[in-house]
Length: 88
Image (cartoon, rainbow, N blue to C red; front, side, top):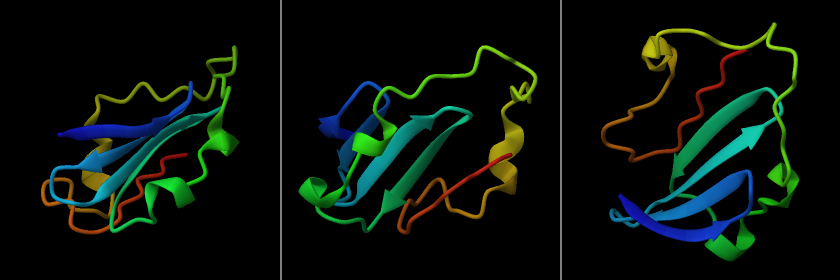
């Protein structure tokens, strides 16, 4: 898949085998991934995701079957361009 280039306890930046980069991060109420032609690793700021915690209240927790990717506007196979799948 790739190699870990930078991380903290809530985010990771990966150098992908196809020469692209990926960011996977957790915020208080969601997890997201972005990949494609991104900035240099040293220019990607992941400090804003440090120490993200899920809320104790599970009222807004997504309990879907995982098929929500069908709704994302991205190509999850080719990963040739940036993709953000944000479900609220």
